View 1: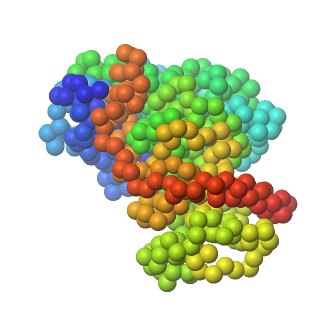
View 2 (view 1 turned 90 degrees about the vertical axis):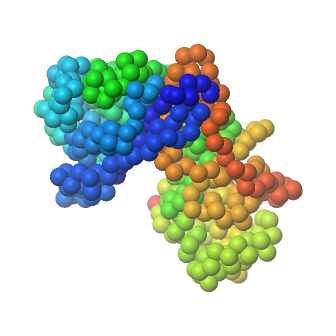
Length: 532
């Protein structure tokens, strides 16, 4: 959608450690970037890494007013840099997933009548029933997770409904804790927002709806009906439905910008606010995934993003509503044993050299002569297991591999696991499937070749620095285009594309087909042997 090239679209990201903004023009080119670091730019809030870790070490919160003041500072920085707010046609954004904000009774009236002569943080300082918002790092709600799963009939039943089993960071369990321990604060609460819908509310000058995609990471929403589950609501806290209000599609234009921003910063009166979403859904948009695609982030932890049409929720991994296509879903699987495990094997088997590591990969055969390795240096998330396991071609345990076999066993094992777990969630390779690789290891072509061979699909590399932020600038464009029936892919067709890195090796599919089945069998075997 290359129109209105003199217009700007803003994407904001209220992440854990900073607030970021990216502006793109009508040709989808980035024209401005800025950020506010919470720790250094807002030292009065005394955060470390953007959060407060409480004495019990499991309660983790962030001051909600810090986020408000950060927006004041960011917009002033943009003004000082000469950014032309009068050309902004639409804004959208993302927030760290699972954080929650508790608006005090009467806050809506304040939002609707903001004085453009004053800063937001001064205007809103008395608007929150809970001053310190629980965030995704919090792990203090184990009891509430058990209660929720019990109320719906078990972990799988909750997963079937909400896309995830109960997690301590998920909003339902955080709300249940606040109701249990701070009932007066809960009763003072007029509206509960996610970080994303809280941020959208600032721009809208009214309470913004929670969008489907971020809402599906709460343990509260039925991901198929896209409505709050009555069972989950009842198990969490009373009068919760009215405090949440109804969720809306992630592509919804919520309304026009608050007059506060029109008068204070000179933004157009007809500037639109497109629903904000979570940071992971925002990243899916930033990577411009399309149906059938898989994105693999190869970092300290490895993360897999999937575009899925017919999801099969499992207790391992997450199913969210798709942020750019309300008829589709996105799956998210996270693995703790990513680059740190690759670096350990590199140090032990390749003298600390990535060049030697790559040489070993090239010199060992596709399929590793049937040898399979499963490497969980730390307790893994998917599946929940720990330890190093080596098997020969007959599925017999082996105490050690040669360096070349060990290196290929690690890389093949990591990617076999990703495909096995993706397919359990409903992912299927289709005609035109692409694998989008990001993160540190995506610069290693030999590692990418194994990834391509295991998935039997071409691998593209993509620069996704600030992907959630960029994705929400794209979503601002798409929000307006969607009202005209345009798909996300059509709306962002002119954006810079991914670069082809490697194609599958001919014949690799015949090798990895049987290995995928063996890997799945061996992983199940390990889980049975190690489960209490």
